[in-house]
Length: 340
Figure 1 (cartoon, rainbow, N blue to C red):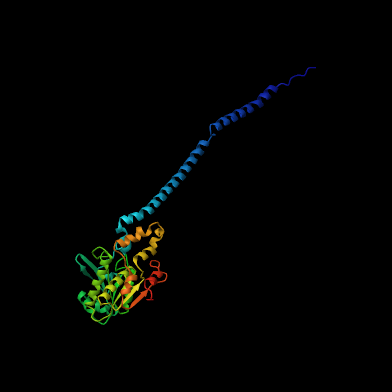
Figure 2 (cartoon, rainbow, N blue to C red):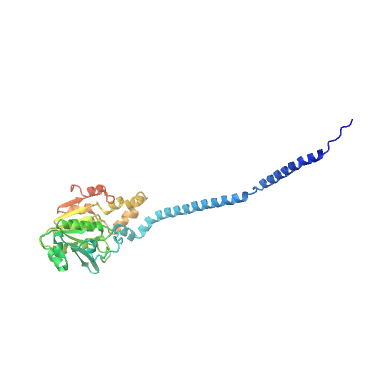
């Protein structure tokens, strides 16, 4: 008996084959898409990746250019200093760095010095220096409303006088300087402070010889009015170089001061420049001495305290903090052997 074919079998076979054909077709399309390097919805991912890569590349590119600029500037500065010595001179004096800013040096009372007179001296033609005369604090009531003539006359009263020579930068109105004037005034001293030529409201261009002559002129002005009262010279930082220059000249002409006080002194400007914090980044630069130190010397700036002290015969007091961050303590000891 012949077996009868089951009805509906062809339909079932076609039903199964159709999904398989669609799956094979989809796989083929995916293989073709993969061969072309992308899959559906991959174009958005690629675009985001490219943007992120572009941002990273741009950041590193800018950073690299900035580093190249810094290295180029680092190498160029020594050559610039050598070609333009005025740059190094300004770094030594810093006379254009006038702080505190916006104070009227003609009005010392604005700085709490209500027993101080402002006036000007003329050491040379076309040079004038601004001067403050702070009298002993015990005379402050009497000083109210008095003129320059009275201040000159009171110099001859029975009080000692200190000629104060400040360091680089700032003016005679610097806060730490004003505080020192007040302390010395409270101890019964006249304090004469001034700005060298080129500092503050003083006219002229700074130089070592000019600064020394300004100090000499101020000293002679004091001696002409102070009678037999003791006159002391106090130099601070760069002012110690001016002070030893001055006192050496005074000792050589046999008119020494009654004593010399040096606060934070150094040996000479070459050694101080080499030890200064600003020189750290160039201290081991090839040719450091030739680029920087020789340029200072060629500009006529020496401030040779270690040499000047050999010619100073008056009493000497040295003040120096062991943790001084600008002028190392060892330079103070080295410059004045046997004076401690």
